[in-house]
Image (cartoon, rainbow, N blue to C red; front, side, top):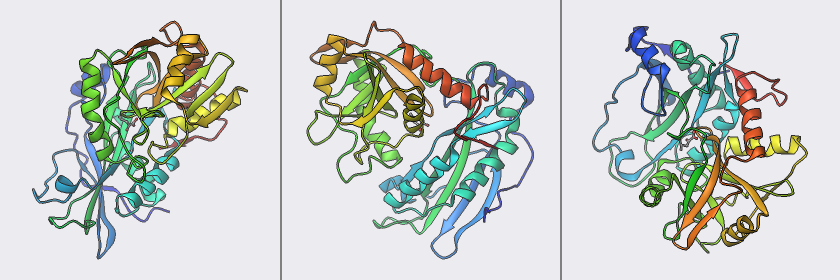
Length: 362
Ligand code: COI
């Protein structure tokens, strides 16, 4: 049972029907926002309270709010999918709720119960129901829960006041070129996270630390950047906001193991399961970058892909680094990659049975 009651404070929509229809016709990713947002506040005295669904709009925040100075912040990402019968579902929200609790512990933020997390998603999706796209393509309503230190205080300690919000954004493909194979730049200069750091937490700081390397990737003509482990600069960690997989010629599905410096992706875990279901051998292991590049050249690795809630499963077509370029397979989209992508999205949109019980009705 949820302890928090996310009651709407208003039913007045921010945008009209025509404006919403115009946005839903071509939503892009992360640029348009809905009519409402969910909110709850935590204080060290009273715990979680003051929950509601409010009109979407700017937040009022002290310039001395701790998050603006010390980055005490975490977030999640999940999607609401409309099925053919009009019902609205989300995918493995309990996994996101648990990960948000782990992130909260690492960032010394208060934990929100899984029930309250789900209640916030339900309340916002109910208020923003017309924003959940029709299941004609691969559009969804991206839900972004986040939590930050809002106390007006410049001392370095965990904040005594924390705000939690969920905002929603209609979403098409994350990458502007859609599901086209990515060009990935391997950075030999920067690391995303180090041992004992916050790499496994979904906190803004990890993404901030990826931005310079990502900008370099784009300047070198790539779509994304791949980070190696910070200690030896030899093992594959992850991309700027996605996990990474390789598939070998003999059908083994490989992904870097959870070392504490990479994110425990919900899509990553789901892909491992779907690959196993197909009878493929899966392995979470250390993937040495130089060996992977050799195996791309020899044809031993035939497919690679990025995965995450926003990116779903996106093929990788080639890698670039200061030392050269390497093509994955024939540079196109791998057969197994596309089959896994289709199966995952078919489950999410209710087109095939949800045999693992991954869907929750909102
Ligand atoms: C997600 O996949 O939901 C993320 O939070 C990653 C970000 C690149 C959008």
